[in-house]
Image (cartoon, rainbow, N blue to C red; front, top):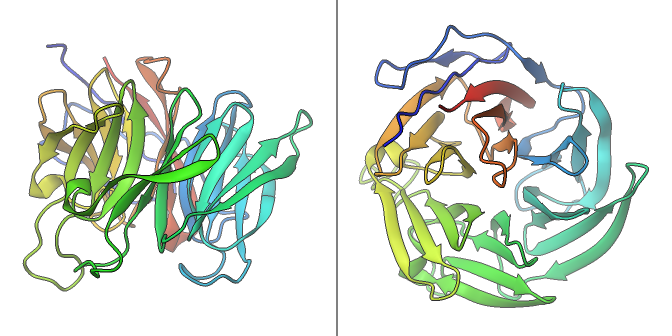
Length: 313
């Protein structure tokens, strides 16, 4: 098996602790941190086609339909291209794309914005998901199918089971639900023929009987489930991005950790942040499987987003 070495460079303005058990790292070197235009940023997504970063912002509170949510567009160097590139949202979270269409989840809706040739925005679609209560993350398949996680509290109310929705050809259905979806599924990523799912785990907050989250994989055709990792160290997975083939980088807003899961399921803590990190983005995209890139990490409580240089070899 190829050895993975991560070079993480901590962006200025964010305090982090590199742990001894992590893979070899170089001394921290800052890339950039941006605060301008960000209000409780939740998800960062690198859009290869436009070479820009889209960041969802609550603006207001998590469950209020107050119209204060918006999306910020940044250049790869952190320059703010449009602080409110798309508006009219409530509490937007996960972002992905299909071509020039930027998709974002917003409490109980999935909203599609078209990125115009001039870099502007055009609202194209707004679909409410029946029965949805707290949509979290979103993943896209090569054929344009969308997968959306929907989980909110623990213990789970009997009338609001944890779910992962699927939207295909403009119609929504339930891909998986209940215990089969894991305990509070949040982070999503389509990797080849599998849907990778990160869960928060059983018991959060003041519950002393916390059971760590899991990293799961579902076959997109059969829905067969495989457990990729399950340990206390992997608890509270809110964002997932690809590392080397078959391995993943994960973030946790509650644990404040950036994690690496190897192909054999070993979980390594790469860094512990001062603030909780939400849904991370990475450049280059998964299709490239390159050995270096930039990780974009939103910090909701700090109203900031930081960039980290990262290499895998």
